[in-house]
Length: 335
Figure 1 (tube, helix red, strand yellow):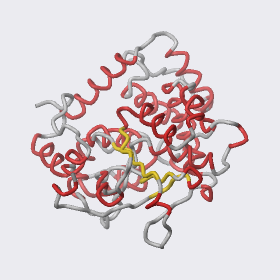
Figure 2 (cartoon, helix red, strand yellow; figure 1 turned 30 degrees about the vertical axis):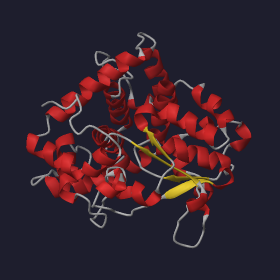
Figure 3 (spheres, one colour; figure 1 turned 90 degrees about the vertical axis):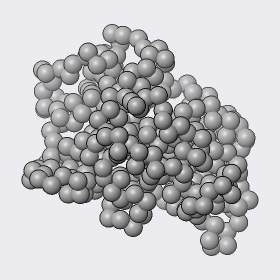
Figure 4 (cartoon, helix red, strand yellow; figure 1 turned 135 degrees about the vertical axis):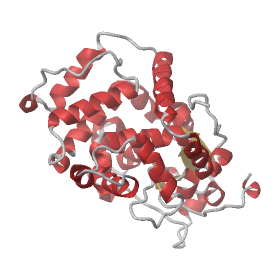
């Protein structure tokens, strides 16, 4: 496969893993890496006494006990990576950048670090608040920014959450034994942990309702980081953005309007999670219905992208399409 490609990056920007399981993992952001890092830190002792990696929140995974997140390299004489079971996960480039937009720019996580840079780069007459907060980047603007920065890893504020996966982890250099896909994440995760001898963990993962877990995790994470961004949005506005994100992800029906009576001083992570849970109890969505909602959302989002930009986007992620067998003309992208 690799012999067919002439544009090699040789990149392995972030390698982690479980040494005692003889597994290394080349990290590709927005392709399930939080779950994998959750497992790695659990095995290093974070919340290990609680008996399940699922007790670790997204906030804990990324902001607590950084000393337990082990990184490895092939360049210092350590043979671990070369001799290990090598794993990476990938995702369709278009759903990956859409997920990054929702997670990092609709929600405030990257407003200051990336949102302000995007506004300065692609919006000629931005307001003072937009320049200071980076709070209102649109998806078409985000795509234009991606096209402008391209493959440049040295460009100011470039980020691994949207660099092509092959720019982050070149499979022709890393030579993975397993390339898992986000689209079949739990199945591939189960296969991988069984292969490395930790199949007993899978039950503690599968027992969690993935939608409930994701909702709880996102609410907890964003309320944890709220103080950083409180000069740019109120708690009510944060809750409203989370509500919108849950609708876009198919967790809440679009006809469920955000409650106008919600009072700023009464909003907490716990109370807001209870509100979302109560609303979701009014309806039941099957897995197929959620997929259909997400497909419609993606179609609507990509309909806003000009054809010329879509063609350039396909060129930007060409190696990912080719290497990982993804369709550059998925059915959710209008033709």
